[in-house]
Image (cartoon, rainbow, N blue to C red):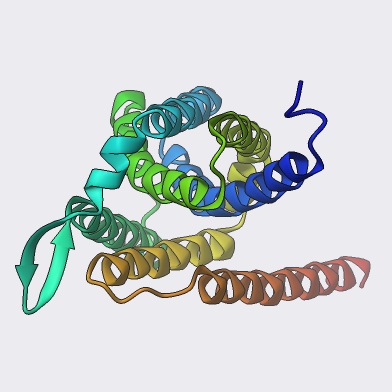
Length: 242
């Protein structure tokens, strides 16, 4: 009851929900690209399973705060830079994203250059969910560390993470459909993954890049692409009326 009547608790909750939702954008882009390679009838299930695992992973990490704190302890030193388990996970996740995004860009460009139409290669539901699980761990670690650093009340952190994941579940369907329908947006989303992957690697090597720069670059690119799509639609309508 004291939590419900405490204005500071509500402010902390709303702030944390907003931050968790923003941090979940990277995850949503990754899920949208991966689920596009599943059979259309199974895409909604793949999204639900992926986001459901994100919730379970984040709550498990949240309830093991001592383990989270231990992840930041130095493990070994490379060229004078202390490397912890958290750094190893971030570097591994960043390299995974760089590899995945590069391969997706390669496949898309090859399909565009190939004059012979061929069936789009599909991945199994299990393979896609497994890949989502791997990257969920990386994004969950970042998300939970942010929550622990901002709020001391475990109840607020739990509620904020659950609400943020519900927002992700609501937004995943429309975002995936939009990315799938627009090839240029899909290419832009894969470029985002390259940017996020490089940021994770840099962070793991001790070169922290403020997330504000990352989200500004994403937001500006999305704005430019939205203008391009609007202009393209108007030109198409103008041609149809002629």
